[in-house]
Image (cartoon, rainbow, N blue to C red):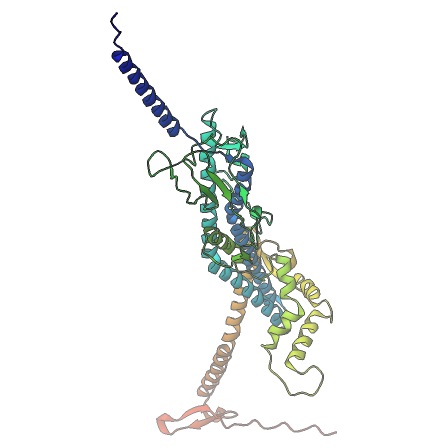
Length: 467
């Protein structure tokens, strides 16, 4: 019996094995391409979003700074007008001096506040811009991962370890600020639980940011061997994202990691001890908003008046206005004379500012009323800056008119004397013969002979009445 030829069947078998091997290799390759990495923990992003929100709020700190300086400048300017009006309305030189130097002090405060506002504007704007940039950088990474998570049921780029995060609709769900901010709330400083004088307090210790249970649910941290198949290279070199606060180590499989570093204890006084890392640089940049120069000027109208009329302030100012004397009596030094003058005007030796305020409020000034006319009122009844401004213009106009009238008096007197002499000359010239006497005399000869005033004439003294 002839043996069957098995060569063909063996060939077919080997071919089948080859096909299977190729298929398995292709499957393995496909699985490798579809490999994924861990998702990010929601709890870690909430810490990060706190930092983003505080960085964004640098604008609120700048706003508080600007608003306070504006309030100080406005209050000082308005009350300088009031005090100037009081100086013009005063009835004595001492009162005028007291209210005048108080007005000058108020103007000094206004100038100081405006000067600080001008010199700190760039610093405030720069710090605000840095805060907004860092906040936007963080928020954009969070937004990308939220949208990726939302786009498919299997994706868990933001997770609560094994479960898909439910906070994937808005940035504010995780504590990050919205992209568009319609208003800015003024605030005095950063929340000390998030950013304090030493660093990012919300990140006191290293925080694991990647999920360990579900580690094949997000493509963000996949690495590859220098190919376009992944965002990162699979070499375990650290990469930073989100304002350089997240450190990720990509992996070709599911071993990628993400951490938030320990970013507290970076320095002191909102200044990092060094600026070699991105976190240190960011902390120092944000801290500049807390170092804006402040003004010690009063902030409200009442505070301006109380401070400007205080004994200490007035005495210091008035000392410069009066000269030192050599009198040996008490209170003859410049400081003593200044104090005596102030208390004389205040009519008290205590609570001088309060007493001077009452005196000022009782001074009479002109208030502009309808029709362009003015009526006399007490200064304390004027509450609006516009009323004070109008009254001040009226007072200055009246002062100018009074000064002009005083300056013209000597001219009028001289004119009167001239007219008197001219009149006497005319009276003598009309006299004839023996009438040219008693203050008149003949002068010249012939055709030039005229009766003129005798400048040397002295009336005879009347004889005394005998008793």
